[in-house]
Image 1: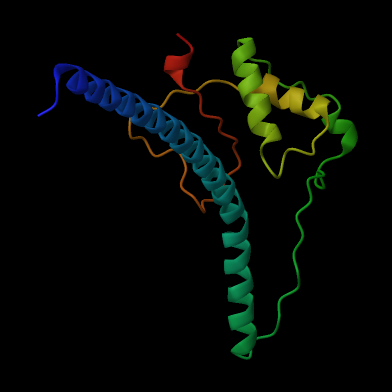
Image 2: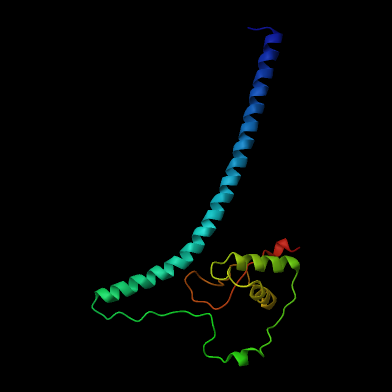
Length: 165
């Protein structure tokens, strides 16, 4: 059995060892949090690409299977963002609605548009018009707003209502 001094020295060593382990645990938890954030960011990017690729892949598979079944190949279709059924002169008189919103909401909407693969190449004036025209809509908890794969003509930007307070 050791002396009191030996026991105190051994206790101090164990305390220091525990401090080092605590510091290592803190470092590893921080690293884990950073990796979780990276995983979430990459998952969001993957979801964006899937939302674009999955419908295109399904359409290509349907065309391939119909071609293989002896049907004639259909003519390719194009999507144009330019108005084709309207006279430009008629559109020049259209006044877009304006809905006031906080600077934080404006920034959130603008960031969402710039983060969207289909809308990020719009001119800044077009983005500003979209931001100005957007308006808040509240849905109840567990409401189904839109499902992946649905055809839609609206743009949704989700805002955490608790962050505004």
